[in-house]
Length: 121
Image: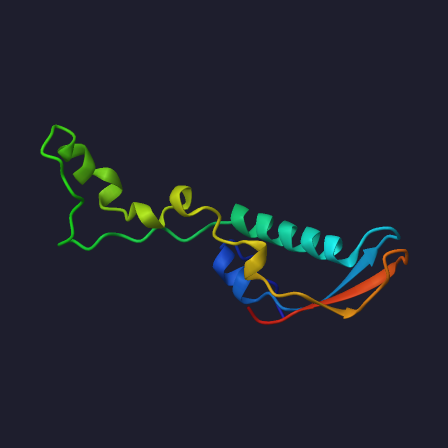
């Protein structure tokens, strides 16, 4: 089986799933470890290539005000839907988008390997 490098976040997100073995030190709660893992996964996904924002339909122009700014409004990024842009929607992937549960639980004062499972998202 050949390994293939994947550069877009949607493909990686689609293939997330399985079991993770994580070392949990003593004195750290399981939820803290879970949140750290999910935050790092989301951070990595958001740094990867994202899909392009949707385009507006041709027959649906941006609203004009009747001023000189109208020509600027009509030429913004070839009719890009600004409501779908990353700067207006925020990060595409958030920790609440991922499902992760503990297979075997460890106490707060116990250290050891913690098994986490993630299902198809």
